[in-house]
Image 1 (cartoon, rainbow, N blue to C red):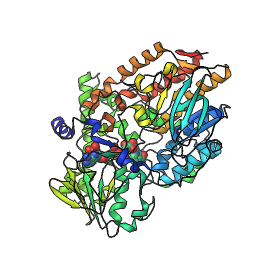
Image 2: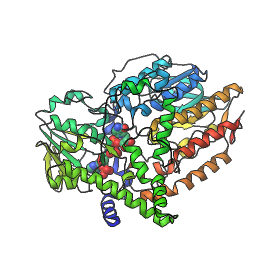
Image 3: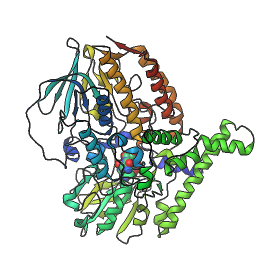
Image 4: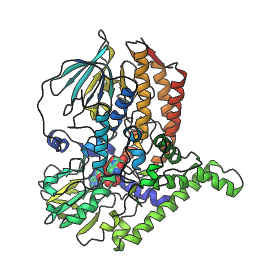
Length: 589
Ligand code: NDP
């Protein structure tokens, strides 16, 4: 079993790791253009705000909401996008849907008195809810949308940040939260000949409905006479491929690594269940999900879906059951072996699902994933596999090598040219590159220190929110944070902590708030220690963006830049830190 996994991994490891992808700049910059909102001209802004939040996605909305609840009203949100929503603003591909239960994924449900219409909500509903959150908290009032920050630097004399944008704005802010999101910038595969390919192309996060017809719910009728290719079979590919298969004259799916495809089991929300929810239910459910999925033994599994059921079978509760069955403690080696076998069995069930669904045995074999479940983000879908039974759909298995090259009109795999009219890149988002490269602007702190220099060998923060030498600056999102599979829970915990720091600053009449260098060193040591276990796990995995494509020591990758222990340990630690009121490791002046 282990040899099979190692063989499949080795086929896919590439020395270029994250450098195999092309940044969407220069000739490729149009892949990141906004297809959703017409540009509106406006006058530049020259003023001062108390808090600027760079980013208007889910994490930023939560942070701003918690600030408003703490009585801090002077907040400005800035985003390149034409509206609020972040990921859910950009991603409008057909079939777009959350893969974590919407009752815990959509934020602020109790605050807005809203219940999603289905268990796994679709993109338009999520986007509308996020925009309603922004309206509810008055975040549109002072926002600068369709605006890209081009730089920010600390004014030591005035004790504030100077922020400039591509709209000619020059304003100041007492505090800034930098919240750019972690899967934001589309990336393209560096396949030879990509520059020469002349057929119609776009990235899934900028879907071209003008070309395909239809909308987020499908109906891509303009593809009826088109030969379409899609590169990428990750979470996005899983969701859009059934719609492409339904409408394209011919669909070629160029697969490098198959995803796991578990049962989705979506259903409309039961109004009786919703009516019985008690105040505080969302927080309780969110907490319960994260605790169950990271292996904490709980009395009840409130979500009880694919995520939690697999966690219960593959983590500490399963070990506890096995220990009880054996009637003795297991050694570390025995636990590792037991968990490997449990994982294998879970993967065998998923492989069997493919055999049961896909009629052509060769195609079924190609669709089977050969790695441990969590090596890649697990996928859930109930129509994806069946798509391969369509006569107009062809799986082109690149056997781990990826697409070979492009000609002007075709994609080439194993020397065979697949002539296309259009090609969709479902190739994901830039991960594992320098933070400021993904941010697309420089942050200059005290004594003209540039963040790109300070973080050249990796992030340095206290608790992921502050970095020494950059007073009154906070980071949200995946910067040295605990990571729940439910991003909203991570964002919620970060938002609480951020609001606590900002309101403490205001209550105590401070002019600066900053992490000490010692506290930062300590957090870095804790981070490095915590990442050893996940790094060992991913060393045996097939590559993915989670492991920086196999370069597990990449200092800018997800493994190095996030807390590797259980997310709830991180969340509990933050709560404990706040409860003392001592601001240990943070200086206020
Ligand atoms: P991913 O990075 O997960 O997938 C990219 C795909 O492109 C992979 O299948 C990859 O293959 C393939 N690829 C890359 N280069 C090549 C190449 N040269 N030749 C052939 N194939 C290639 O991106 P996604 O957009 O699918 O998902 C990113 C993340 O976004 C998810 O993991 C999830 O966290 C989030 N997401 C969540 C959703 C939800 O909640 N519903 C929906 C969509 C996304 P390989 O696997 O071999 O690298």
